[in-house]
Image (tube, rainbow, N blue to C red; front, side, top):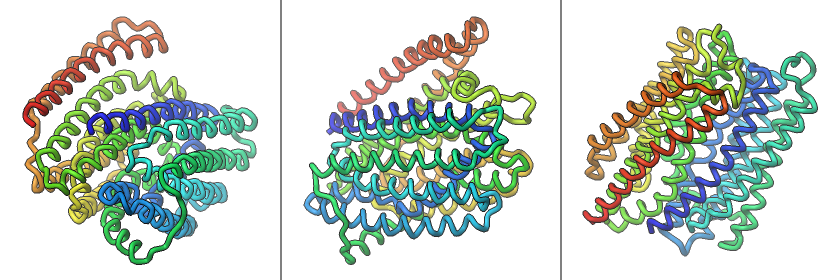
Length: 495
């Protein structure tokens, strides 16, 4: 089973690494051809719609994986009804999103409303594509998505690059950019439609697809999904509401959104990687709990905690040391403007601290999902969301997007504490203090050594990134890989 989880996770990681690299090209194109304000508008629109996406999703992806894993014979009924439910919810929610935008300053301009409408179409196809991936994930045959995910990203980047080269000039955006900007938004619709059709074609080899409406089953799936869905929606609200509040309350508006969101967009790629890992582990966690094999359940939770913590420490060292290099390479020096009170480099430091607690929180969240403790998850997210919104409203006017990042960090810490509290009531989860201290000491040593190398022996922008980044990565990864291997060996001996 470990090998199957590993291969399934590896396929998804390779897919995500491939799409991440392509996404970096997309970010580079957009930041170099759009003004900071126009790029801020682009990010603001996607951030706004993403909140409604998760409301429409109802966490059906994860719930469907759990249901298929527990009831293989009902695969067809589960998938067909979930697709119908998603289509209905998607249409309903996006009508609400477009209607609400009319009453929000900064979202009710012609270009913003048209963009929101187009992105709504994109996300509707995204929801249907996710339904197809549910079947592939539950059967641990997700490898094909490696090809389709990379393919649609390439299509998106090529279309955007063509539009940018034809219509945009970075230093002269005073002209009519309304139509080309909308074509950039349409590019994502074409791309997601392509990958949805490819995944649909492949998934039909596992199970035929269609739409079904079994009212009794839909009531059942809504009943068990609703607490998860509301909890997920609230988690997205406290994670993304800061962008909406920034655009409404900060004097710099879309410019602040762009400066803050650039590092967040880069970091989100890393965060998704371990969501894939935990989705791969989820069927095993669910089965272990159903069979009352608490020892096996606890083993996978402990290993996940170890892997997530160690990986984040590596990422933290690399990205904190090289954050200015990466911003300049991916975007441009405008995002590092020293005349600004805060720039994207400052935001990077806060954002990376957010990632640590997000990683650890995910372990506890998936433990609650696997054990069907959705009511506790809902309670946690209600508390965190209320606290987050209040802090943001009070403090954004004073410290702009830096405080928005700090509020998100504090919210993640609160989420982690509450997640641990409720998880520990279900299983006897021991906090590995020795592991945490080892990682902190190693992190401090590598940060100090890396800073010394970069300040004492700088060669050039690309050389420093390629050579020093690679050297630090190999050394650090070698150390934590040995640590994880030892942990696996110790776990097998105890079992």
